[in-house]
Amino acid sequence: MALFAQSRLLDWFYPPFCNLCRIPLRRGQNLCSSCLANLPPLPSHACLTCGNSFDGILKAPQSCPNCLKLKPAFQFATAALQANDDTIDLIHKFKLIGQPELGIDLAQIGANFFRTDERLSKLEKPLLIPVPLHKSRLRKRGFNQAEILAQELSRQLEVDSLKALKRVRSTPRQATLTRGQRLKNVKGSFLLTTKPSKLINRNLILIDDVFTTGATAHECARILRKSKPAQIAVFTILRA
Ligand SMILES: [Zn+2]
Ligand SMILES: [Zn+2]
Image 1 (cartoon, rainbow, N blue to C red):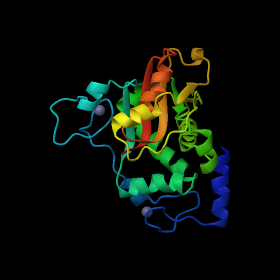
Image 2: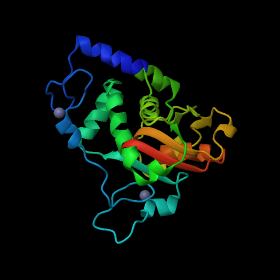
Image 3: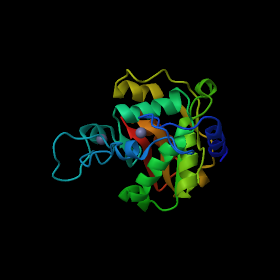
């Protein structure tokens, strides 16, 4: 709520421009309708478990070789958008340049996707859980992008959200690591900070900005799974 009010207040001082094409916008907007319409959804031929796109056409829905081998601790991961120059630019502006108000637009894109996605929309009484940041990174960035997204999604979809995890170990940047290295890198980085009774039999949805290899999501889900939830899904704005 505070973020929402703050961004509306800023609009009075700095009339908004589209974050992608720079055309002037009405107050309260960060993206124009034509840029919004051109953001790419995930391809329909993607891994059932991690959302990774397959080359060519599949005869039937299936999981990719990575997921068959690694068996992620979550049931499925999906994303509202596919990575391209525009969507990466938006995420970059949102979290690295520090435009938290863009989180409202990204969450709106996410909420629209959520309502129409067959698997997400069917989860009964879902509980959104943001992927936590380590306190040292939180201090540097000033906000946790996953928390903003979870709060906004919770507001727009009228579902519960809970900060159930804590990041106890700061992990080096993962961008250049392989999937196996990332899995090792994040192991033991998260702790449960809520009573397991709050998670038991619930449909949990881990929320983050970007899904890359799924190592972070797998490790978070591994910790959450100990509380015996009904299901664990992963929902991100972007699938890298
Ligand atoms: Zn635009
Ligand atoms: Zn997969």
